[in-house]
Image (tube, rainbow, N blue to C red; front, side, top):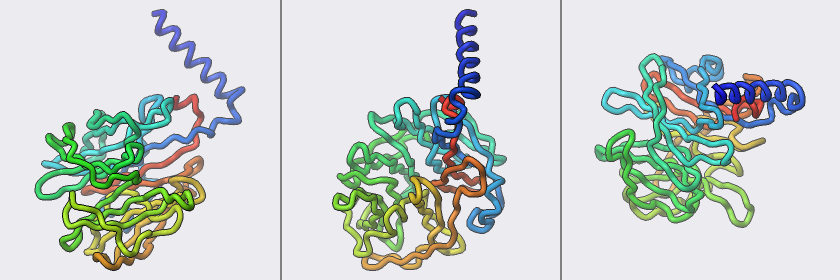
Length: 303
């Protein structure tokens, strides 16, 4: 009873502070949420008019979920997310939850832990196995994991690239592996997205002659590359004017070991919803579609 009373008192104090002293800062905390919708038509077809149909998921107090990635396996659809802890200012876990055909999300459970920041759990299949390339730039390397028992048990397969890189996104195209990876540029202190190719999934990376792809703050991976009507579509994000501001669909027009070309199809900016500051990840699996959004919220509402 004493503990319950203390918790109720703490919540009351937070409510009073948030409506008085801290009112000017009520939208000062950047807090990401997962947006989910069930639709016969993908966002690539529906465009901006579909944005209000996304339902936003809440995470436990003190956390936010971001970087959603979907994968179907044995008749079930799974949602993977980064689990960011506000007080630590980083994420050290990847979580997964099952999603029903109607979009109902089950409980999230940890699938991968790290002693450094880990996010962007990029999932893909190859030769009958399921792999994950999470963002592990804090470990100064790109790591590859294979599902030993999907979705909750993963085996570390090795290092793909022994340098820090953000949001590495692979695609297997015409017997060659390609990797889009955003890397800090030492001379300009900027983040530039580079394209690499390799003879095999775990083969040596070669810098593509077209690198870097996209300008400063553009071209960074925003989710798995997918096919639509025989077109190869690369979701990308833009960090201008702020990190994670928008995402786009870019069609890959040509890709081989010597040349690369793509064109912008459409861009999704956060201007359609009040207090929405950015959107930077996209994924679709069957009729399930996910994005993430950064919201300006009262810190006492989420911490």
